[in-house]
Image (cartoon, rainbow, N blue to C red; front, side):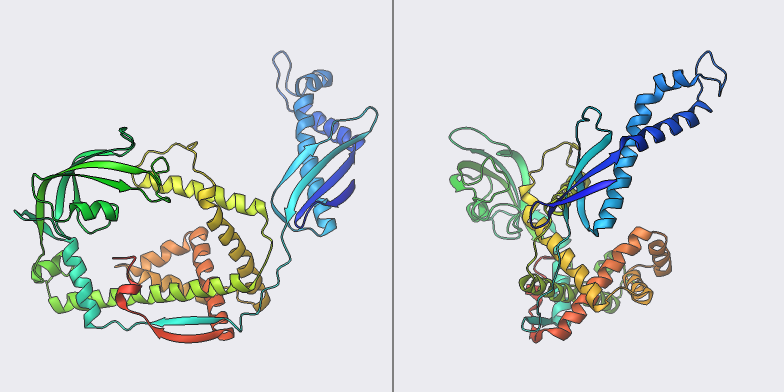
Length: 436
């Protein structure tokens, strides 16, 4: 085997490989001979098929198999000899055979992993957010739960935030309807943010049986591309205003939350415990986000395009699965523009390469004890914790997800010891804004 390596760019390489055709012919013949001992063909006893017939019937297929195996084997050997770390999938191209060349020649174009030098994080400042859960936070959470369980009674008054409205509407752009522009007897809770803010503004103050016509400009970054940045005219009729009626915080409310005996004290204690777990997780997530951004800020690397493309494809697949899980019919070939995911995919690949280097350099690998501790912590929020622990350990894939979490935790711990750290209290509403 002969191999020649070319550098096409900062990360792009091309290997040109030549294999003596005699080796390939010999392997083809060996496989055909082995096949002739077992092949079954009409009119012949097993193992008695003439070799010529076997060659005629299977020669082309076997040759293609040998060429494919040779390509994979020799490429792997050449990569090892050249000490290359291949990123993504190579693009193989077989060269057309020349007369009496006596060689099977092909090229493989691919990218290699970049050399990574993690920047100095010691001058970066990371804020460590802090929040103590008190009765005030428990009361706020109970109030949210009451709103989530609200019933609605018809009200003869103007619509206000918190009311459930029944509306019919029709929208047009230049006199033409568009996708999602019309609905009849649709219900929406005013102030929840399901509609564009400008649309909700028009609904506030309307009364039952009232109609209103107004113009609305869709944001430039609106998810519906066909209407983004355009101005539509809407005609809206409000059929009913229903005011929320919140449940009392009593034994029935506690039972609805899973407290069998309806004890309010137990309910508050359980809400506090759940809230403390949630707050702990969100504080940890905010701190981790800062560490990751700090590593990105101090480390400049060239990211292999092939890895970014693979990550985009993975995110597109995940997006289709998420849509299907929500009951939205999706086809496997449904186009999802790659540019939607490009920036996030670039960041993920970049960060993954940096984290791998930090873990290797500072020996931050996940230990079995650390993995067990995280599994047990996650299991505590379930009624049968031991069964959940067994469930984790029955799947290598689930354990790998936990190991990844531990690795990130180890990197965060290392970074918090290396960087400048500032403690700062954070407001409950700010921390929980996504949840609410």
